[in-house]
Amino acid sequence: MVKNNIASKRNNRIKKPVGDMIADCFNYVLLLLLSLCFVVPFVYVISISFSTEEAIGLYGITIFPKEFTLEAYRYLFRSGSVIIRAYGNTLFITIITTALSILFTGGLDYPLSKELLPFRKGFMYYVLFAMLFGGGMIPTYLVISKLYGMKDSMWAVILPGAYSAWNMIVMKNFFSRLPNDIEEAALIDGANELRIFASIILPLSKPIIATVCLFTAVAQWNNWFGPLIYLDNTETPTIMLFLRGVISSSLNIGNQFETTEVPPTQSVQMATVVACTLPIVCVYPFLQKHFASGVLVGSVKG
Image (tube, rainbow, N blue to C red; front, top):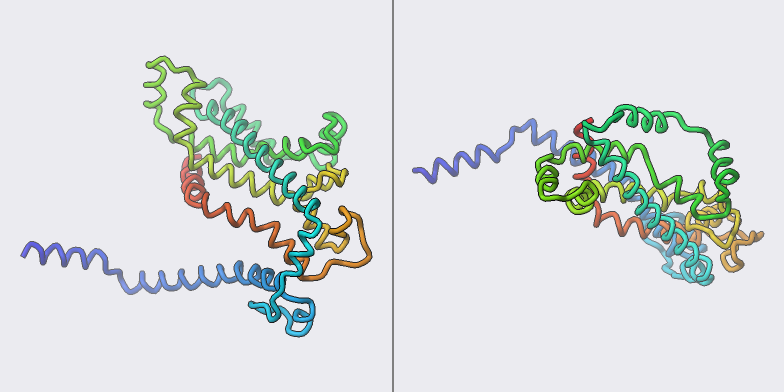
């Protein structure tokens, strides 16, 4: 008798009303259609990258390549020194910028999360003002290239991207939700603020750190405008400048970024798009869990 009552309660709890089931089906269909809107164009890009130019002209764009070939990728990596150097420069900029972003953002947000910090609101208003009102492109260029003398230096791209006011707000909200009892216990045991931050706060902040890392890494990997105006030296290209040159048909891959009258083919252009986006696509699944939880926790409390 008792087992039957438990089973009936479980069935009643699991069974959903018809209206909720219809709403769930509508949401699933809507999300599926939205997912297809994002996935199908990328599938077309991959298909073109593995197709011959004759097949593209004859059959048009198809989901599966009609005439499979690796010629575009052979041509793309034929000048291995150029694309490998572009990959190396982009990885260097992305890794250094992400590490500095965690250092600068965490170092500022941890004190700002404490209500006893003097002039706390003033610092917050200062950061928010800088987020809402920028200095403009020309003053920023003059400060970085003329005042700091970082023209043709990777630091001209790294330092401006090492801090974000949005990341600061999200991380500060996360720090504000951490219990104060842990820090008080560590202070009683003799730990200083720096030791508490490095040994307690950072290990507890893996979700928000993963979130900030993903935001910063994606932004720096996709950054093409900063390197375009600051890096005039073609010996230090980035992968997005490499992609821009191929897409604009002004790049001779086999001749070290010099222009050519013969434009790259569609398959080579799409192969370059795949080569530039593949690293981020491969990294994102490993950070997705921490990314979702970090954004959720960091956005609850303002």
